[in-house]
Amino acid sequence: AGLIVAVVGWLVISRSALASTRIATVIAGLVRRVSAGAGALRSLPSAAAFFGLTALLTTSATLVAWVVSHAVGVDLTPIQTVLFLSGIALSLAIPAAPGAIGTYEFVGVAIITGLGYTPEQGLATILLMRIITTLPPALIGVGSIVALQIRPESIVDSDQDLARRQMDTPSSS
Image (tube, rainbow, N blue to C red):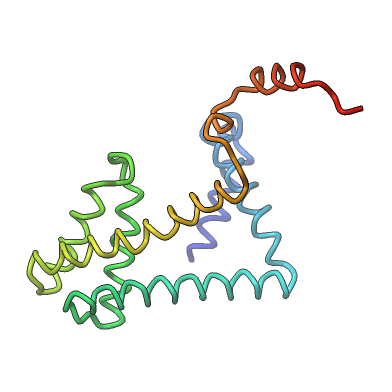
């Protein structure tokens, strides 16, 4: 039923006077981009890789949340763990302070307390979750910058600065 409504809606938008409106142009662009991305699913190997990697990522994230919650004494069932993880992931989509500081913690504590645990257990769970999911990628990023010998000032160089530096450097020919 949903597919039929989508097809009828698309036909109404694309075949009527609405087709030249800004909203129709935005919708058409979105549909084009989604269709182009979905085109990668036409071959069996790429579709299998996509769904396999998605399942791997989802499973590992759920296991991390489950281990973290059990580490602080919050014994969540697998379904509760998925609810917890989904809620804190959605909280990152809410416009908030940089890094969703405060929003992430509020939602995490609200979910854990809603499942019958104390606010202290909720706060311990979400703070450990924040550390486990933020610190390793940050350290890997710093390690990568060091390994690639990237100078901090080169990150913010403009195109003009780079061009000027290339002109000032004698060529090795």
